[in-house]
Length: 174
Image (cartoon, rainbow, N blue to C red; front, side):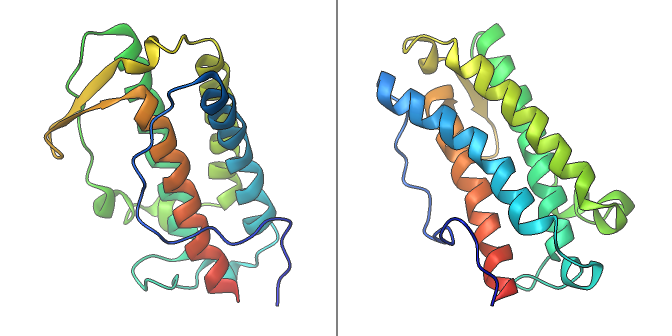
């Protein structure tokens, strides 16, 4: 059995709690920075055989989940910046299942996406740290969900998203 320095994240649905205070902002920054470190701790030591094992949900392999998380968080960071620089922009959804079938997602070393997560999360945290609580109310429109999503809700959503997928990976290893 593998031992980790943190507990396996829950597979519970996202609890829609936005960032609303200086304390929750500091926690969000800390949680953003923890995500890539946790992924690296869990995934970097894995063999190719482990990386190509289907996760507990049986849809994607561990490798695909790691690359999907990077793809998703690249899109999220761009949406975050659109919300900061435009007035309630409508974002473009992307076909996640189709992206998971590309050769880079199926075959590339996970280190590529671990590096992406480290860079994106550092930049995201740097920008988030400099925002006022008022700026956290800026939002974008998600046409697939038919709702406006504030930055103050988006950041916790993607922290949850990463931890949700990390939980799949960790339970696959047990």
